[in-house]
Image 1 (cartoon, rainbow, N blue to C red):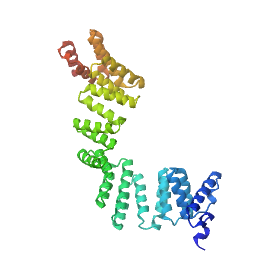
Image 2: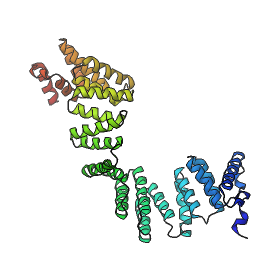
Image 3: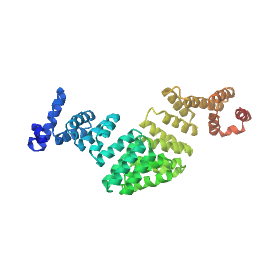
Image 4: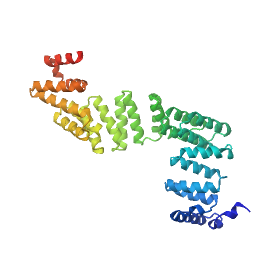
Length: 382
């Protein structure tokens, strides 16, 4: 008796689309009334059912169908791959490893299963074991674009667990095997960036942009690197490209505002922080950034309002509290309330003396105020 004698009636249509669709509807109906355990389907029918749920992002049904399918067709490498992958996606890593351990020898040198086995080891933090598995694959398989992309896919699993060194090794290894599509240049650049090799990161981000100059997030990444290198004009140019492509890229708005602030281009910084705060209304960093830019513009009323808004959002925010106190001290000084001015300075020193430097930067005329300079000397000695 052949295996076909056990197939369901729906497969009598010689695997036609209609037969496979009937199997899917039968499976759905059985799941609804809890009788799916009694179903018997062919391998092709199960593959059709599983792929339907994969395409519809229904992880629970993918797992349910894969479990039942592999229980009936444990000789199928395709069903083993779907089951193990589904187990990993749904957080059942330990069981996925157990099943792959148990069945991998039944499919010797099957690259799909071995790649999935390597993926499971990466997710389990066993990077050396994963590399050993990959080395075995490479020694038995001919290089090809498909294999190269499969190896490169393991890099994303490494990135997901923040192992950028291993991710980079897989990407470069895959690229040497068969030149990867240019979009992988962004992944390579990202790994170099995380490994603080910024010049190489710039090279690969530019390589990506040479092929696709319309990716606002890659322009953002490039701008951030230039900012880290204090190449601020290049940084501004990259952030502006990013915003030209997507005016609502809040990350680019924020970093551009910070660059302007570092360059003491306070008007541009305040305007950019204001746009950022329109995108993310309750972002504490954006509100405090705007307050600092307003301080630089001597807009004390605006700065105080921004610091107060930040304090309203988080009454434990030290920077907001100190900012309010610093602005009030500046207003006291300008109004001739010297006693109140120095009382506020004493309060600031108890919390963070660096804010005294901020006040001095905003009011450079204090250099001629002997009492203030004596206060500074006292702070330095303590």
